Image 1: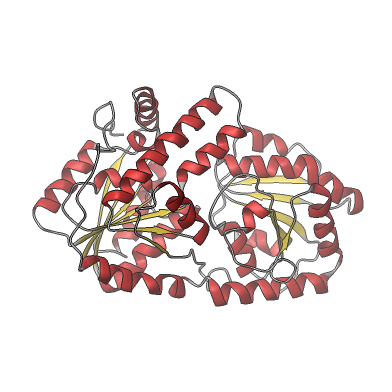
Image 2: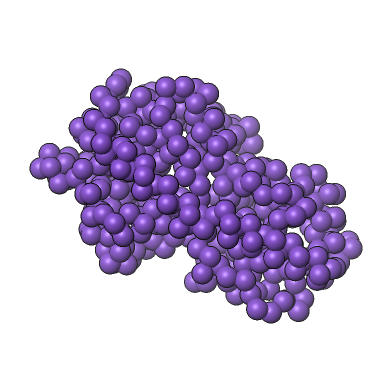
Length: 414
């Protein structure tokens, strides 16, 4: 089958949640099909990912975006009734190029990953699988409750506009994929007409293999993109409310914050006693070697948290909030620990840091859970049957306004 796969950001290196899923889906599809991967690049350094991806799929089509111009396009779109996200990822050049190739009959099916890519698939006359992964509109609504004006207003409006986009997409997409049953239920709550299926997120069990030796002086580890609001909020909350309780019992406890592009708020945390902010690192596994416990103290977010799966896969115990754990069908107390109140969260950490046997037990159980439930091979096995089923159907007719309508021209090339 000839598949056009759309990704809103180039999925290499796969170091953030959206890129991880898109990368593994592309790799899986390329094993059995002829795949053109089309994506947007809004970070100049990410162009380096084109070559390794070209060696994995049949072809890579991409357009570069200039962030300031894309941001202005997004804000202008918000002002005239569009969403912020869709025009941000809009490229006339890429749309024109893909339209020409589709008109020439080069593809049999479109696989669109993440809501903003639907603008390149709508009305093209091909069956479309829309991989929402998570319901982005709900994330923006959550952000509106945790930010100050005027950002809270922008987030609230974006949540409303994106939900409208998601409902429209669900009318014409042949199939909508979600990462968890909870995300599927949320989509159905405002788009009951959607044809849906769940394809769970996975983890690279070879790369994220358990460490052979236990850390001599175990630290507490948080990983993730550190300019992402839920992660910024999580580490601020941890440093303010939880870490002092832990250090009161274990004064030498170190908190390692590891991830690309730390925001100014995150960088300021490095001034606290016991807190280390690494910034971007080429390989996060050496930090796992120093960790006794991985934490996911998220108060915002939806879907499956890869940071939780990675910690479990590495055989390191994870302590998470309900928000961070709810996309993973693991058992609290057996596969990981779950707590929302600072006192309870800190108590789990102190107990685990003091007890190597408990750390080993929880880490071993966590690894066993992800092996059984979140290996990419198993998660994506269902995708093959879904692809074959959708390819046999006629595409649904496009309905309503085109979601790509937005002010501004083509992206500025840099």
